Amino acid sequence: MSDHFAEMTLATPPSSRGPSPHQKVCHSQTQTDVLKPLLGGAGSGVHSAAQRRRRRVLSKDGRSNVRMEHVSGRGTLYLRDPWTTFVDMQWRYKLILFCATFVGTWFVFGLLWYLLAFLHGDLLEFDPPANHTVCVMQMQTLTGAFLFSLESQTTIGYGFRCITEECPPAIILLILQLLITTAMEIFITGTFLAKVARPKKRGETVRFSQHAVVSSHEGRPCLMIRVANMRKSLLLGCQVTGKLLQPCVSKEGETVRLEQRNVAFSVDTASESPFLILPLTFYHIIDSSSPLRAWASKGGGWSDPELADFELLVMMSATVEPTSATCQVRTSYLPDEILWGYEFPPVVSLSPSGKYVADLAYFDKVVKTKTPPLFKQTPPPADCHGYSSGGEGGMDSADPEKIRLEQSYREGAGTRARETSPLSVRISNV
Image (tube, rainbow, N blue to C red):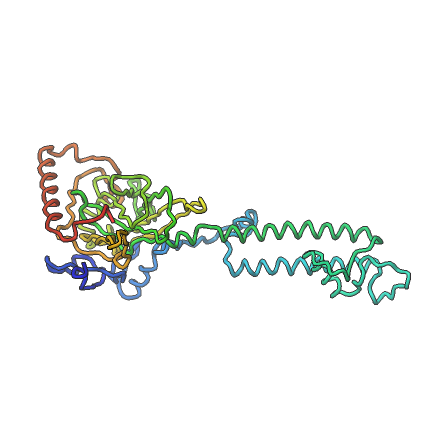
C-alpha cells in the first residue's frame, strides 16, 4: 500500500493540479490557499484569503464562531439561570469563584460575629468587668471573629472559642451561618461535578476526516466523510447529520444570509445506528434532491464563486456507554476542503494474530480515483442559486429508455473500474 502514497501534495482542486492517469496522489491535512468566496466573501489578495479562512460558522474542532452582540439584559438573563451559567463558566473563573465563595463567607460572617460582640460589649476596648459573660469565649478582636467564623463553618472545633448561653442571638447567627454556607457549598460543588462529568472531553476522542471527498459509490456520486472512535468504550445510537449553510435570495426577494438545508448521511445500507467500533465512512448521495446538486453539476463548482460559497456542518450525536450521557461532535467543511474525484484509502487490516488493526496514519489521506464521479444533471425546480427544493422533478419528463441505458453504462463503467483498481478491495466501508 505504501507504493500508492509516495507523493504528497497539497489539497488543491483537480482542475489546478492534474496527476497522470497512472499515478496515485495522496493529500495531507494541509489546507489550500485557493481564493474563493466564503459565505458571501469577495475580493482578492493575501489579506482577503486569510480573512476568508477565518470566516466559518463552525471551526474544524466544533467550536462556534458566532458572537452575539447588543443583547439587552444579558447579565440578568444569565443570573436567572445560575446553574447553567456556572457550569458553562471557564475553569479559571470557576476556581476563582470557588475560593471567593469560601473566603467571602468566612469574612462576612466574621464581621457579623464582630458586630454581635460589639453590641454586647465583649470587645477589649470596652474593658468589660470581671463578672461580664461574653457571647463567644476568646473572641474580642476582628481577627478572633474571623477565626471563629472559619472554625464554625468548617466544623473544626478547636475548643478554644465557643458560644455561651448568654446570647440567644449568637445561637441564631450560628444556625443561619451553617444553613446558608452549606447550601452554597452544595451548589458550588455540584457545578464542579457537573462540569467534570460533561461528555465534552469524550467527544474530543471522536475524530472526523480533515477533508471530505466526492467519488462514485455503487454507481452514484457520493460525498463521503470518515469518522473514527479512538476509545475502546463504544458509542451507542450514533447518528450523523449535516447542514448546508449558504447565502440565498428567495423568490420573493428576501435575502437569507445563511440558509440551512439538511444533508442526509448514511452508512452501507442506510443503517440508522452504525456500529462505530472501526473507522467508518458516511455517505451522502448527490442526486436531484441533494442540496449539493448545483455544486456537483459543475464538477465541484470550483470555477463558480456563487456555488462554492457555502459551509457544510457535520454533527454526530451518540450516547456514551459508560456514563449513558449524550454527546455531540461537530466539524465543518469549506468548499476547498471537499475534494472532487478522490476517495479514502482503506485503513483496516488484519494482523498475523487475527486482530483487526485500524491504522490512523492513513485516516486523513485521500487518493485520486481513476474514474471521476459522473453526475447527471436534471432540471428539477430550483431556488437559491439553483439548488433543488426536493423531489424528483425532471426525471418523470425524461425518456425512460434513455435513462435506463445511461444507468447501465454507468454501472458497467463502475464495475470495470473496481475490477482494475488495486484499492477496490475494502472491509465494509472502512
